[in-house]
Structure formats: structure tokens, C-alpha cells
Image (tube, rainbow, N blue to C red):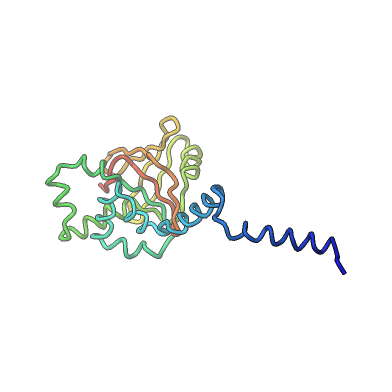
Length: 189
């Protein structure tokens, strides 16, 4: 006996079967590509440093200092990371000498000076500045203090030597904290 509703349902299902085996739509492919890209992103601060060519000098500094091993799976931290361009402001010979494995203690003091225990987003820093009446003192892992102020919407940091650095890219998140990219190298006294 012929059953029209079942026949129509079966025909519809058979007609849909080829659609399931076709390629993804453009939108579906974009979503899939975005998910794959997100999963391929580095997760901890060290991986992010190593993955960003504009931060390669900072990556070398952290690696040679030994601080990178400590940071890799510990945290959370807030790191103020200088760009290659910031390192290039140093005298070429001074930079070459600085990035020598023989200067491990000095490298460690510089790396630890730009590192803070706990996570501080740019909003947290701005709030601390407001709460501090226009400035905030941020204690570093290395035992120093970074002074933070605002210049308009920009966060400006002052190191122990009186040098200033502006946060050029804030809130780079990782599995073990937050990084803020700065335009000048922060140095202890």
C-alpha cells in the first residue's frame, strides 16, 4: 500500500543527502578558519613573545636572563614589554653587550623590572591612577616600582631611572597573565 506522506518525507530526506556532503558555505568556512586560528594561537607569555617578530629582542632578553623559564607556566603576571624599535634606541654596542649571556644578572633585573605579580588590565591601571590622584605606583617582581600616569587616554610609565614609556598596545592576554607593549625599555635604577 502506497503511503504518500512517508514517500514525500523519504524523498525529501534523499534530496537533502547530497547537500550534506557538499563543501562548507563561505560563512561556515570562515567560522571554521577562525576557530582553527584561535586554537593555533600561542597561549603563555613566552609563546606570545616568541611568536611576535616585533618583540624578538624582548624574547631574547627574557630567554637569556632565565626569567622566561620561571614565567612560562607560572603566574599570573602583568608584563610591560618593549618593542624591537624601543631596544634599537639603545646604542648598538650597548645593546650587543646587554644581550650577552655573560650579563645574565643584568638581563634578569631588566626582565623582572618589567614584570608585575598578578594581572592588571589597562582598565585596572587607569583606575589605580585615578584612585591615586593622578599617579599609581606599581611594584615589580624585581623589587622596583613603576610610576604610572595618564596622558590623555594613553598610559605612561616611568621607570627607576626616570625614563618614560607609553603603552602602545594594551591587554595582550595569555594563559598566565596580561602583556602591555611599550615604546621604550623600562630599566631599574
